[in-house]
Image 1 (tube, helix red, strand yellow):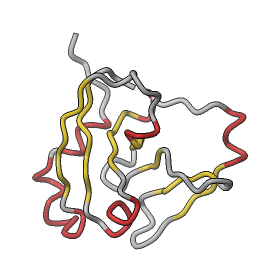
Image 2: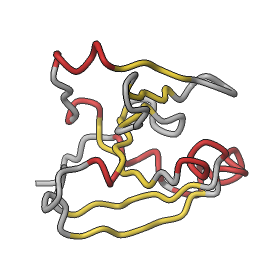
Image 3: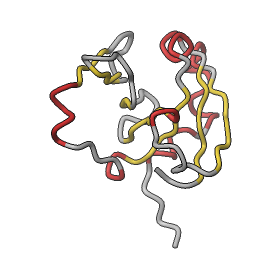
Image 4: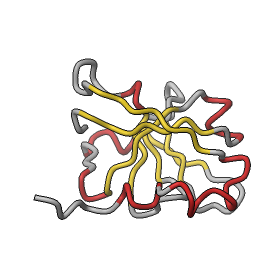
Amino acid sequence: APVSIVAWKCNCSDCSMRGNVHFIVPACNFQLEEKCKEWLTTYTFGTHKAKHIFCKICGITSYYIPRSNPDGVAVTVNCVDAGTIKHVEFKYYDGKNWEGVYEKSGIESLSKVSTNK
């Protein structure tokens, strides 16, 4: 994970029930160990664009493919090793009114690979 992140607190039905706070990275910057894949399963609902991936044993969703960023991965902040993240800027996403806030939020840019040097 980056040292400094923008984390999203969302009030959609899924995030609010789970208390999920996540940050988004480009999919090419996310790597899951192959041996972990057998322990995961996927849940979708609504538009079925978001892919909520969770552990078959404990039920924790450590990451998922968000509807807002299908080319990225949303990582649950509390699932990152302690000490990895040094700074968190919290933003709020009105997931109950998803369509009305998506373009205004700027969230879609977070799954793009930065070309800044």
